[in-house]
Structure formats: structure tokens, C-alpha cells
Length: 74
Image (cartoon, rainbow, N blue to C red; front, side):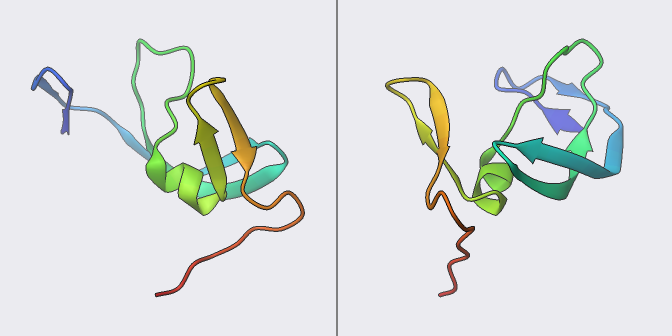
């Protein structure tokens, strides 16, 4: 089940081993299939894994470190 921002709940299929490449970085994820979408909705987990930052002013993504992926350990 998924819950939308307007609190609707719907049953959706989950797919595993989705290979995603974005800005030269790639990883494998689990995804929810949304039948009426033609594009992908990328969330915080994907952005964090790919070490990408969002610039809301220019509506763009960019790597935190262009030459490498950083992982933070606390």
C-alpha cells in the first residue's frame, strides 16, 4: 500500500533490482510502480545514495563531490 499526500491509499506493485543511472552515478534500488506516470519520482533515499544535492533555485541536481561519492558515517 502507498499513501499519497492527500491521504488516499492505493495498492501498488513493488519491483526490486531497479538499476538507475543519473548524472554518471548509478545504483540498484527498490521502486514502487505508479501506472499513470511517464517519468520517475526520485526521493531522498536515492539522492543520498547517489550523493546528489538539489538546488531548488535552479531546479537542478549536482554531485556534492564531482570526482567521488562520499558516504557519511556517524
